[in-house]
Length: 168
Image 1 (cartoon, helix red, strand yellow):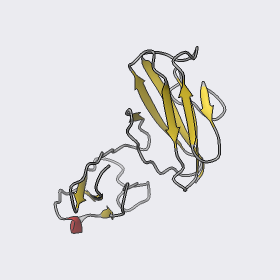
Image 2 (cartoon, helix red, strand yellow):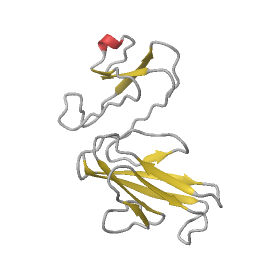
Image 3 (cartoon, one colour):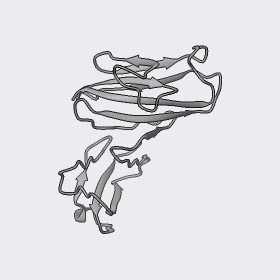
Image 4 (spheres, helix red, strand yellow):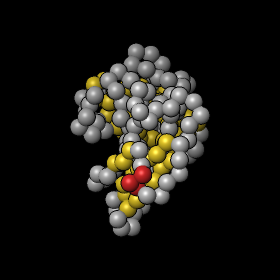
């Protein structure tokens, strides 16, 4: 992102004034809001959430919304910030459409824990002990580079990614 966009959310009603938001994040840099079960804003069924992005000056940003049980679609060169509790997985998919290209998948710890990385082309949810073809379990940031010449690599297919929060 460029500039400093801030993030505001309200449940159930459209709004244009940031002061009307139910929740706001106005930090410098990347902002994200997580609504967990048990939070006052959490809704079990049939709710609408409205999001407002405001910047004091010109800003370029990406906006991502996802359900905890959903699979995140990763995009080439686009970072996504996720906050996971200890011993929880986040699942994602990389849709590879360029045969003959190497693929690098990286995860950083943002000084809040130890994420581990697992990748497969055949299993939707690769895990710590099974179903992974490639893994990285170093302390802190992890990265996997899959060479186009790797016998398990595929040219035009999906790579299924699991990020596991070993610690938070």
